[in-house]
Amino acid sequence: MTSRRLVLTRSAAIFGSASTGLLLPEIVRAQAAKVRVGFMLPYTGTFAQLGVAIENGFRMAINEQGGKLGGREIEYFKVDDESEPSKGIENANKLVQRDKVDVIVGTVHSGVQMGIQKVARDTGVLSLIPNAGVHAATRGLCAPNVYRTSFSNSQPTRALGKVMMDKGHKKTVWITWKYAAGDEAFEGFKEGYTAAGGTIVKELGLPFPQVEFQALLTEIAALKPDAVACFFAGGGAAKFIRDYAAAGLKGKIPLYGSGFLTEGVLDAAGPAADGIITTMHYSDSLDTPRNKKFRLDYAKAFKALPDVYAVQGYDTGLLLVQGANAVKGDLANKPALYKSMEGAVIDSPRGKWTMSASHNPVQDIYIRQVDNKENKVIGVAAKALADSGAGCKMA
Ligand code: PHB
Image (cartoon, rainbow, N blue to C red; front, side, top):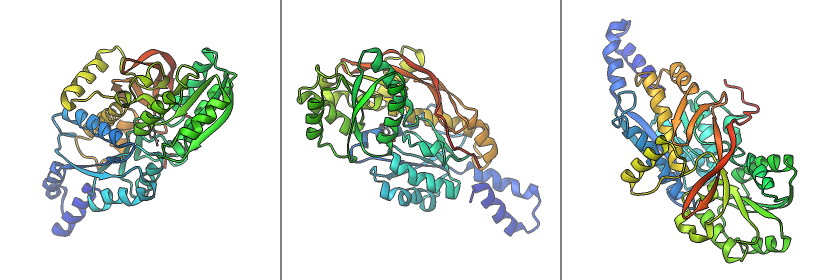
């Protein structure tokens, strides 16, 4: 039940046929209550550092507003979702039922997101997705109370195939973790690459979050493709990059990927990452005052370099600030809140992006190359790329 409705019900019970005048102080007090923000993110496992970067970025956006949302103080709640899909619904319910949060900020893993999506659709709680790209969240299962500030899984890879064909790589092996994020990333890659005339000679995969890559790398060596394209992220991505080089493939068969491959892992991957080309909606080296200030402020605040996950967390904060300001902190005013977020133009470190009708970013996709522990922008792969939003019917 929304705080406004709660207040009205309680006041009506106290005052009987209460006039609006009698209700006003109660409403004012309810709005003065803290906004309850719930982080449902991975704080352990292969995506642990992604969760931390998202939370950091989100807090940074809020701290730029004096730590408030629409004039109201904030109380934070946290659940470690462990990137474990089987606990997704239970964990989301901890935040909604036990902690009574006004908004869930989460999560990273597409399978876990499906649990949050169910709870969001069942309860109407505001759900802001700071990473997980699962198509259904902004396609067939889209909802007025669900907004994604990151990407859809096929968005970053859709433009990758053309980039590879332009380099003359006509035969490619695809490799990924076999779950929604990897499968949907492949969907985007396949469409773009085959449309550009490329041939996918083999699809390889292993279950998430396994990192026993050796047998698959041996198979790649035997297949001798022109190039390899992949989806991996977090700790597993760092290991894949290192293992790829250790298997003797670096320098022989160029490695490409959606940009997650090289996000937040460049220290851990070391020189094995040099030269890898990826496509992504952010690049460390974007030469704009907005990005430079963001990077400097983030480094000062957290003694760490920001990555795409930090940007997505930050943008989630910016979106919520925009919505909360539009309703002067009254998050129970859903029509006005949603209207503001639907029309959002986010002035992000990645560049300005807008919210699509199905609540997914319409954004530029950059071509980046790893150079000396930085994802350097070397081109633009797609301008204002939108997800299809296929099957989305807002209730
Ligand atoms: C996902 O599961 O949707 C996912 C996880 C990590 C990424 C990107 C997508 O870096």
